[in-house]
Amino acid sequence: MITLADLASLQVEHADAWRAPVTPVVLDGPHGSVSIGDGPVTLMGCVNLSRDSTYRESVAVSPADAVRMGRIQSAQGAAIIDLGAESSNAKAVRVGADDQVRTLVPAIEGLVEHAVVSVETYDPRVVKACLAAGAGILNMTGREHEDEMLTLAAEHDAAVVMCFGDAANVREPTDVPPDADPIPALLDHFGARLERARSLGVDRVVIDPGMGFHYGNLLDPVGRANHQTKVLTQTFRLRPLGAPVCNVLPHNYDIFGDEFRKAEGFFAVLAVLGGAHLLRIHEVPHLRVVLNALSTLEVR
Image (cartoon, rainbow, N blue to C red; front, top):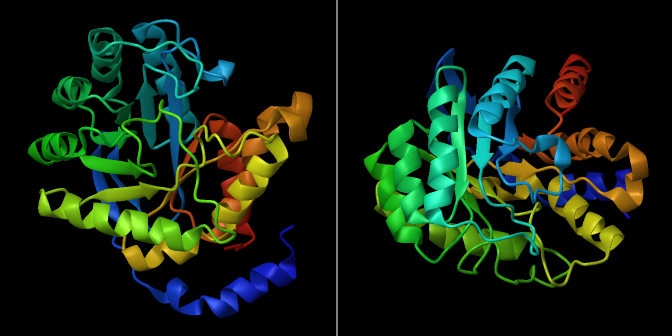
């Protein structure tokens, strides 16, 4: 359970973390610069070119359809569009690098005039093709070829979303740290990786605690949501790393039922209160008005 008393206690106990400076990640976009940092929360819409995605409303059936959907999300308020060609669902079909490139590259080329484009992958061949096509962000979901992918990002002057995880890629079975307090493990995990990224020439990194991925020890939907809530409300404790934080907002059928599309708006409030800088989402217009309401009411 998270109560107001809990949140107040966290604020007092970790006040120094709130004061830690975060260097914004600034990107050149087709409509001006996009800043991910302590200003207004930035929205990253996502379009999935894999039909295995569990969020059916985000699935594009072709590169042209992905461009159409991405343009709509951009018009609705997403400053960044994240494209992926393989679902992170543990039971989804594996998609080879050549097939990923064949669908992602034309989608990127069709979207770069409308939004900053991010590509989600863990394969260096896909990274190289997509950054060459104009993607400005690598959403890196694997560790096996991390140095190679970071080097490619540096060569293309691309930003990186660095996702939590120690497995070769997000498709491999893994667990979240079992500790009651997940933040120390996240600080240790990202500290070394950020130092390595910077040594390879990547100085624009956003960290992602990995709340959107499958974990073997979080199979109970309510238990999973409890863990996600704990991380979302304590995002500010990652500020000493100096990097902005991306939160993937959960959607939970067991809690929200046939109103599951409202879940992202609910979890967005927790993420904003917790100090998130970037939200990866599916429901862009809903999240836009939720963020506008929080801003209007000066909730932070």
